[in-house]
Image (tube, rainbow, N blue to C red; front, side, top):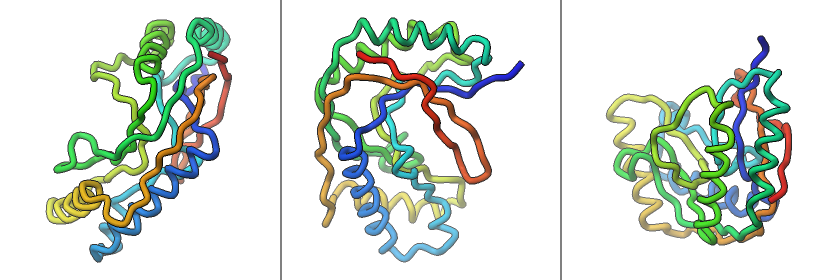
Length: 205
């Protein structure tokens, strides 16, 4: 049985994506000034700008024969939700600035409407999901992941990330805003060079 690795997301308009990508590049430059070795640089896996998105629900592997039913449930859910406004928020890390494994940019704007949409999407697509997420959903845009490395290198990387994000020294922080009027069902294909995302369906709010 063929399966599709899928997730539901809000994709950014070009101006918001460009703003986040510019901040990402500035952050990368500032962190690199700490004199990282090539090995330490490789531990930082920066998200390609065209793949930056806001995940509403990761579904995992969905049988291809169920995609049409998933699209229908997704469309019905989004049709019952109105459009709303979002803006780029502050930066942070998971699980914390002291132990960063994911560097992210947060969201501002009508977060109540965003959370309502996420809850609706989660409930409507639960039967199609390969796994249940027990952690509380936190809206964010992943811009970098910190890979496995030794303790000494991780401490140096962590200190650099914490310093730059806390001080925001010489960084032009993005403040783009936009109207959210749709969401996308996305396919994620794993390749040796990283994941490739392809839209399968778009649902209007």
